[in-house]
Image 1 (cartoon, rainbow, N blue to C red):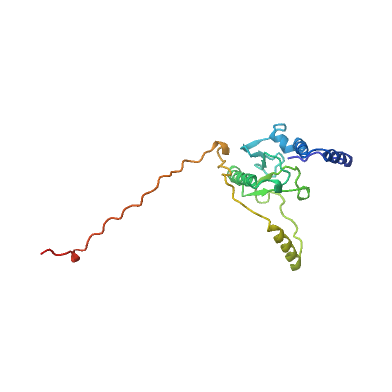
Image 2: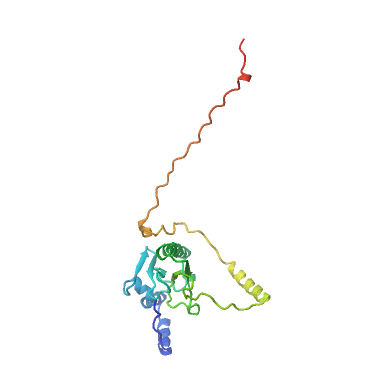
Length: 220
């Protein structure tokens, strides 16, 4: 998707001043009005929809790396991934995984790349969480590598200690509801799982063993 318009320093200062005087819900509503993806979801900007349900929307990327490059985004506005509830994250990536399978089949891709960025410094152009699902081919010219930085053993240990300490706050609980049905043929809301049989299977009775005639009681 194209990057949003650039603002001058004066415009940015004016926006900050306006935001400071607004209530949180008013700020959120303003963000949604300015968000390119929120406008796509409202139908204000034309796009090429691929699939959707009540939580997630999938569309072709209009500036694709390769043919079949799609975007997977939540319908609710979240600027970066850490803001999202766990169940919506799980839903989003369940859809992304299945769309990757569809892309393999539809494009004959040799690989599929999932790319998800958070914040301008990471290259996020539009502040609405989205996952790029990109069909990949040998020598397709898409750059994913970076020049490795050199760190000492002490540097690694210091970073490890810092991250591991903060990571202790991480808690995961499996979603209580089903995330998303198979999407190859229909949206999740239109697919229902088959009936599950609750009939208990009775164990088969073992056939009685024949008595050895050698040990048969003799009758007088």
